[in-house]
Length: 502
Ligand SMILES: [Zn+2]
Image (cartoon, rainbow, N blue to C red; front, side, top):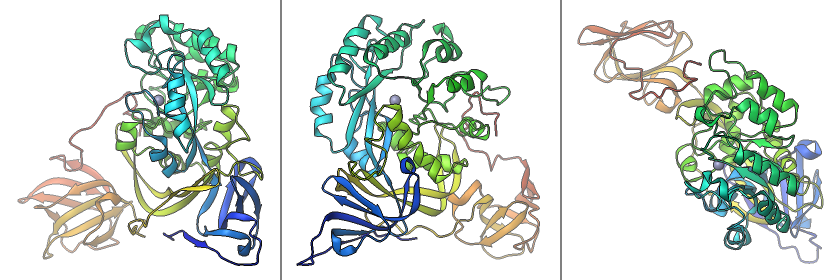
């Protein structure tokens, strides 16, 4: 693994340097152009000038050694909050460092305050900020505004979009808490008026008279977008009793409705995403729903959400397509964004795929351990380097994940304390300093004795934990069969409708 991206300023008098920056030796993945190979990328001004093997170094004013890294189109984050919403963030501080050069604000502004959004955020951001205009004139202003049907005006909404087509790419309806279809239908009306897609959230309350089936099959159009696809607010993507993808979700997809991740603080759950991906229900678009809480608790930046989907079996190439080409197409901006085509604006993300043991948290939050993680190393927006990673802390090269880890156990017959790592049905390691974060299940065994005496690496994982001579926990072939004191059980466990899923 390499940590430093070497950048060299070249001064070579007498040579014509036709490129401002050349990224050398990286592995280019540009799904839109079918490129997945070691290549150099040359930038001239704000544009991609060339992609080829072995672009000569002397033709670059600035040379970036990207070997060991992936060089990909600047990521397109279809769902963020950078205006009006209470948790909105500054895109240059949060999205650019994560490789996202284009972000779409999902409904922060409505027709009443779009001009303010444009002046105060869009015009001042290095990030390319696009907008889904809220069907609510006041935008994402909380209640009572967001359920005020009087302020949902399809004509004024469509007019505002048509006047700002350079930056408004669609409509958002969200947080609507009253019964009936007014918010969704007026958003779709405005969408027809302006010729743009509508993104809907997942507010289907039992007292609303709405159902997801009816919404998807009778109210939305092909090209409209359902965000928050992997949440659990209501019976939705996965049938909570059978674990199967609901048939109307598959039917809606067949008809052209798009499904977006919109991770956020509450909309990515391991059981739901796992079941969906097992049945091939992958996201059309990967997005973060980045806001103050989701960035602080789940760290749900684009590389984080992409890594989670890779943990569930998607390939790097596939998550990249759904983070570049697909979102660009969903908002009608492909190939203007989402590709490294020669002549396009040079928006580039340089990513590292790290190996080790990494913790990924979902929205409950529950964790999963993975052995790969994507991290943003450098971001280029319109030909300028706008983010460079500092020297990261040295990551552990140890990619061992323990199914069960006892910390600080006194093994009968031994002196002192040891950690005992179990993988499958075997004792994998006995030692000191085994990392707690590498354990699926962690048991703090300080003050307890573990038997049998003479426990050794490689032995079958049949152990007992004793408290003053009394057995309080037993493990057979690596599985916990009794745990009288709840040593292996988190103090707080959160139940949800899918919590019976593994
Ligand atoms: Zn959102």
